[in-house]
Image (tube, rainbow, N blue to C red):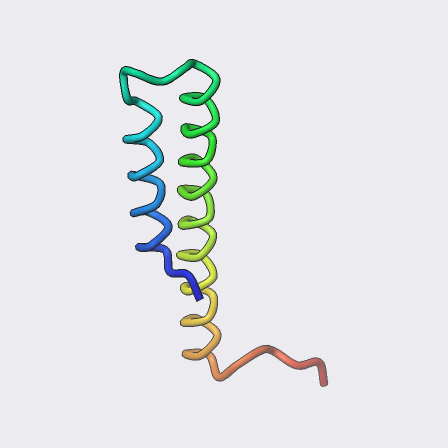
Length: 65
């Protein structure tokens, strides 16, 4: 499974590519959009990890009686 740290690294890589001076505006826009997507995914994975941790500490999912 991809980790939040990996996503952040990909985001940084695409951001660097998107700010290169010798590329078109269209390419820069696409690269920056991909960078933002990786950043968003990193945040979602962090939230998921926290949910899993919280559920593990609580003893799993609450089941109806």
